[in-house]
Amino acid sequence: MTLENRPKRRAPAAVRITKPRARSAAGIREIFERFQTANPEPKGELDYVNAFTLLVAVVLSAQATDVGVNKATRKLFEIADTPQKMLALGEDVVRDHVRTIGLFRTKAKNVIALCVKLIEQFGGEVPTTRAELESLPGVGRKTANVVLNIAFGEITHAVDTHVFRVANRLRIAPGKNVLEVELGLETAVPPEFGRDAHHWLILHGRYTCKALRPECGRCLLNDLCDSPDKRVA
Ligand code: SF4
Image 1 (cartoon, helix red, strand yellow):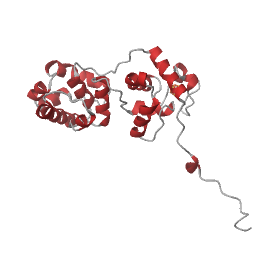
Image 2 (cartoon, protein in one colour; image 1 turned 30 degrees about the vertical axis):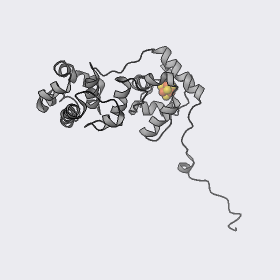
Image 3 (cartoon, helix red, strand yellow; image 1 turned 90 degrees about the vertical axis):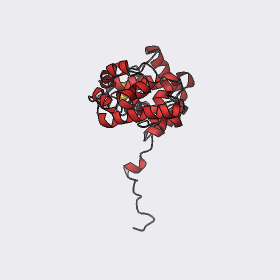
């Protein structure tokens, strides 16, 4: 057998796997129309009373549940709803309030450092640009996106574990990492759904399209979904 007529080997499976194609624009619109019909005014589940307490709640929510954060902040926000009041409490008291939340020591430290910077550089107000928000201690891209969206009404897409999973399963914005999914959502989500998309995707991922056992039987997108993770009853 010569080299030329030897049968060609197939490429290994890993090489043949490509990123799934994004759904068509019409298909994506249909998804968000259904979300909107089912829940016209979606809300986040973190409790807050103003932009400052929203910012603190989101900083505290990293690797913690919204329910757990709300329990810890209920009393804290009653006595400290401004950076000045939070700073006056001091790190020890803030730490005591949030000690039921994971990474509470680091988070309490960040909250105090955050207050110092808000007072010294932003006149005690929560800044309104991504760059300024991301300059604050404990604030990353996801937190900045949540604050820009909820407090300031911008169309931003904070990608947490739920949004990442749902955007991939439904092929709204397939991506291998959170930034890829976020940028995909920016172009894929029709503008009129932009402000609420983040809430719908999180709620869908948290309560229906769960990581291990998605509840496909009661999913309002069941007939549109072709995810390999879809469970057939
Ligand atoms: S059918 Fe299942 S996998 Fe598909 S979006 Fe709905 S819950 Fe998720």
